[in-house]
Image (cartoon, rainbow, N blue to C red; front, side):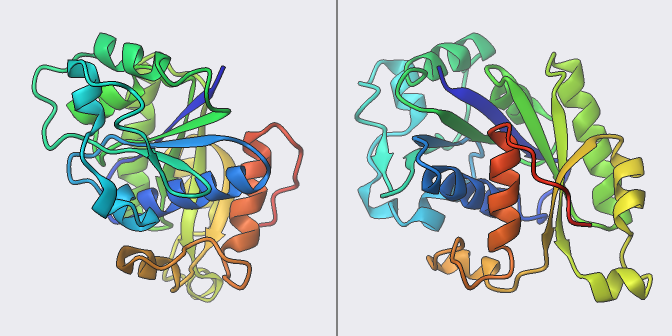
Length: 237
């Protein structure tokens, strides 16, 4: 059975989708079969992994009766399901049945939720076993991440972890950004990893690979992926 992990954030712009793709690629590099499910109606994952031209069906079509394999797109190291343009009358029960169709074919299913705490998050969380909340080290994102984490807990997911993204140590030292302890205290969630500021990741929006050995974030993504698999890796703070 696949481990189903919800990846969420309180607000947009924290790098959630880029981290979803990066973690998916890191898990795949370890020999796992990984499915990325885009649950944001704005749809970004297909662009980040370069399968946009292939897209015909989305997971909404599968719920409506399309063959589950027809909506599954091979991005080389990971597979992708894209989101419909709106949720329509899709229910949490529908989402659980959807993920059941792919449960035995993958080791990990990463569910990229839309930012915020509205219906999109509730649907995204319907079949998740655990969750990761993404925050950047600033007051606005920390507050929204805390609210998102509480919402996820209210949906019955007890195992929630925190990734602090875009950490620029120089700005933390100068007091321009919050330090790691302040972010953990503010979000009230156990830390699973810290990802440094990496200017190259934003180029993923232009189709460039966001998981490469020469990138600043590479080791951090690998370490988080190892922790996801249950391996003990000390936190480098």
